[in-house]
Length: 72
Image (cartoon, rainbow, N blue to C red):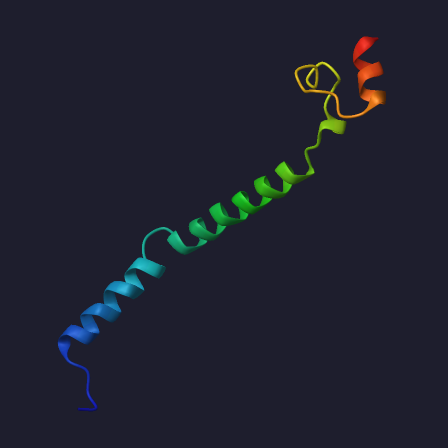
């Protein structure tokens, strides 16, 4: 009852190989996750104010100042 069977050890070995095996898979997964978080944060920082007026030309003006800006 207290000992592991061969199947328990086989499952543990497979999990260990998946997590730690082969060319740093765990570090590659974590690196990809970090790149995704960085891209998400950069996407949040990107606002219309940072873009040139030419890129905003297709957007509808929200204020009177933007309407005047588009006229000139």
